[in-house]
Image 1 (cartoon, each protein chain N blue to C red):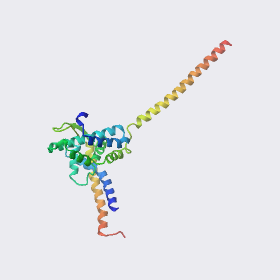
Image 2: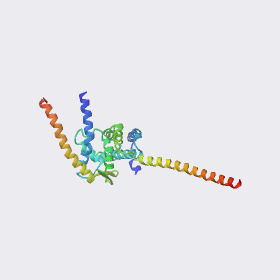
Image 3: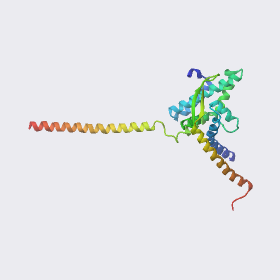
Image 4: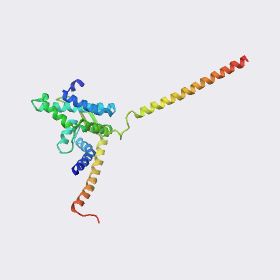
Length: 131
Length: 120
């Protein structure tokens, strides 16, 4: 599908401005936003082309589409504004893995102590026999 | 200075109510982004920066107030259509009732000031 959504340099530059501004967004949010805006540009361009003979090649049409979309920073700000009210998608998974790591370390320590215990018993048993 | 304050207040109000205007438009059937923006643009001052509608639509989808489907088009690429869900319709109903109360309350104070009737 991406091949169908290729755009001219002006639009690609606009999209990379959004991408740069959206660095603080979670990956899936950023990808969705970029896909939505890209799709908007392609659809708006196709609709402008079907109603005007200059069509797709007209740079004035593209610059109007982009200026109506507005400041990339403002678009990203709107996406960022929704973040604090929602639970970040990865936070629970991250907490769970931290708990797992702690449990593993504790189990290894207990396991190690048990092994040392058995070893000490074994040595005592051997020396008891020898003596 | 005063104009700046008005502009700030309006922008905050707009941010709060825009999603309900979107839900209300979707009551008339599913629509894709460009289509929604065209209709919102018919009324002045509702949308100042078109691109900000996409984070809003994404949030409405995550909240389960709208659903999205891809549909082929006769011209150009497929469109992502937004459709009102039953829970979106309920949210819109609740807001509509609250908004009339809110509107009446604001008008009550604004018109009080205007007539010059000050509290004793």
